[in-house]
Length: 293
Image (cartoon, rainbow, N blue to C red; front, side, top):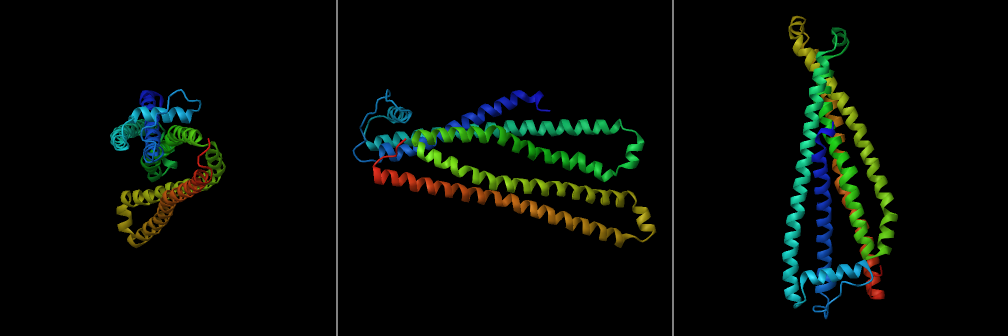
């Protein structure tokens, strides 16, 4: 289903790569505010581009980019560069989201068309065995849930690996010790996030079955409303619908709760890792006077 839209997928990949690159560039330039501008006595120091380490070469590039004027002039130049960098960063972010959205919505449309066409070719015996509510749920709800799965797949296969590789590379340039520590902590955070993701997927599957049952009751009641009225079965049908709807509410509420937990847990893990790295990195600078690569 993705093959007809491979050009849009390539566009998404390239825009994601450029977004991550601009994000890393922005972070590096912000760090330069402290390392090359705010330090007293280094406002006009020139670092050549032919230094041995990548870190020194990047610092030399940063120096040439922000100029060799006074610290105030360098600060103004850096602010302009940051505004331009964030402008392009958000532009690439928008292009990435639009291209992913186009592909996923076209895929959903193609799958629905194919399913409906396939249903029209099935014999009557199939419809005698199958409930119309379940078929409607598959075409509308189950196919819609594939949109979320596709977005998560794009993030897992393209965006996140690029982001991790670029940021780890930048962290390694700054300090190999901090990079090693981050790699040691990463498996724990990945395990926690993986468990939450598995729980969300299990609840999503149960929710899909529940909405199918709900639509089936609705379909049966509406198509057989004359029979329901003739045998005075309104209260029974109402009770059936209320019970199934209550089950659906509980499942969707639990699913949303787990999904809402993802952001604060990710933030907490990220802040915890950041604080640990900040403490060790700050200690290296204060005790040894440098952040050794």
